[in-house]
Length: 134
Image (cartoon, rainbow, N blue to C red; front, side, top):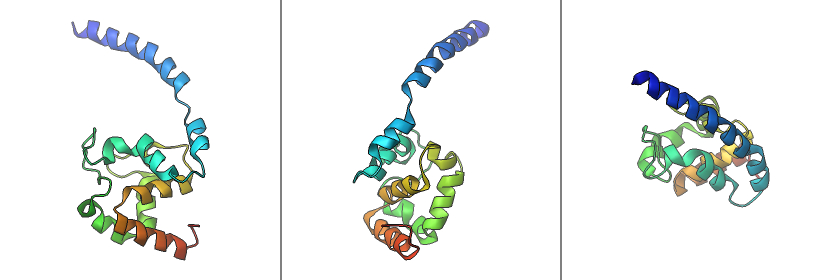
């Protein structure tokens, strides 16, 4: 019985993988949103929402979008630490938040998008002071 299930999973994987590869074009998506007003929000929706939503599909303890209590201490660490954790991955979060095709600037936009309103101001001011935000 276990062998039959394993064979079934293997066959299913063999058929799904090429379909996913043919339909997953992150470079095209990222190029299409580059420079748009909601670029950070679209990256959040595409790459981050499963774990960082108010009610995440994958509840691993990641800070939730806009939740002050989840972000208070993290924002105090500053944008450089937040970016480092995003870039390298932290706990269950993969490196670059799973968006290996995202530029550093796009990841920063996604970080700014996900924090509460008060945190956005703090991080944007920090980025402006470091000449990393226009």
